[in-house]
Length: 207
Image (cartoon, rainbow, N blue to C red; front, side, top):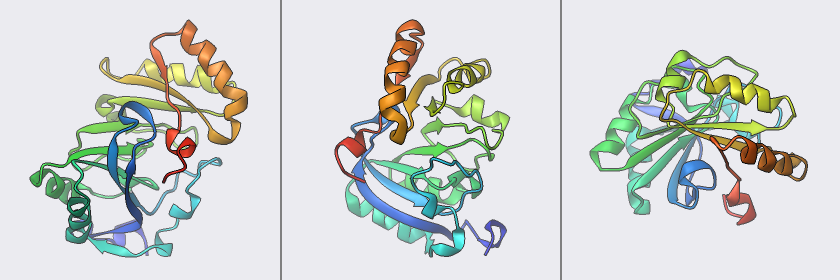
C-alpha cells in the first residue's frame, strides 16, 4: 500500500493514539490526545519512532473512529504527529475535529504541503529532506533538534525564512542530551531570540 492508495477523506493509517501530556515545545505540560499517523520518508537517523515509517505495518482507521476516540478522552487539544502526517490530506480529519471544538496542533518536518486547517503548526525541519515554502509561512513554532555542532548554524538559516510571529526552539537530541544541552544553554543565553525545548515526557516516563 502506498500513500496514493489511501482515501484520506475516509481513513488514515494509524500507528497509535493515546491521551497524555505534551512534552515538547510551546504546549509542553498540556494534556493532549496524540494521533500518530504511519508513514514517513524523511528518514531521521535519530528518530525514536522508526516503527512508524512503514505504512504497511499499521492498520487503516476510519476518520469517524479517530474523532470518536479523541472526543471520548475528554480533551480539548489534539496533536497530529507521525511519521510525517502532512503526507496525507488532513482536511476531513481536521474539519471534523474543529466541528467538535477540538484545538489542533500538527508536528511536521514541513516537507509536504499541508492540506487541512490547524491551530498550531510545529515546524521541525530536517536536513534529509527540503521543506516546502508553505511551512515557513504557517509555522507557529520552529523546533530544531540539535545533534551536531553544525546544527546551530543550520538553525539560524531557517530563521531568515520564518514568519515574524514564529517562536524559536532548540531541542537536544535525546541520546546526546548530556553533551549538547550545556551548549544549547550557552547558545540561548547569547542568542535570546531562541528558547529551549526538552522532551519532558521522557523525564516523566509517559508516552
